Length: 137
Picture 1 (cartoon, one colour):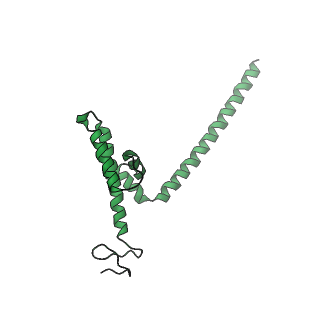
Picture 2 (cartoon, one colour):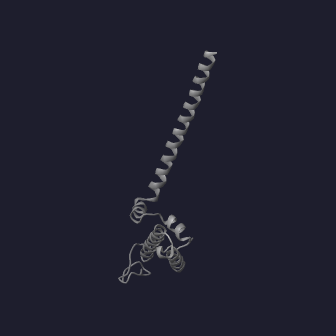
Picture 3 (spheres, rainbow, N blue to C red):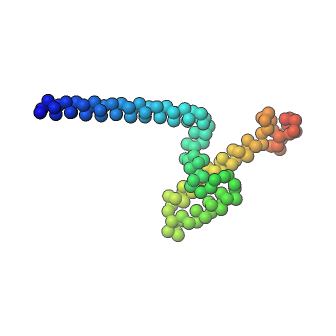
């Protein structure tokens, strides 16, 4: 009887050990895949997310928008900021999240506007508009 119990304990330990090893391997593989994705998105995007405190996708979720339309962004921001006003019984934390989300989206819009002013040759005119022949005016 004692031999049987000892065998069951050994077999159980082997099963748990294999499961733990397999889970550890999966975790290593997923962390390496996440690192590759992070490297492919670039350090500039990571720096922007770090500086502004949230990613663009998170900011879109906070403001409940799908595309970067300035009118929709402002309308959503105004509504959420007003609803979460502390004097009206709202949450200062949520109001801060809404503000930071708008700040992050505004940074993305200004980045896109700057890149739109540069043509495919990377040259801009003195007024910020690219010329048709790629030369600056």
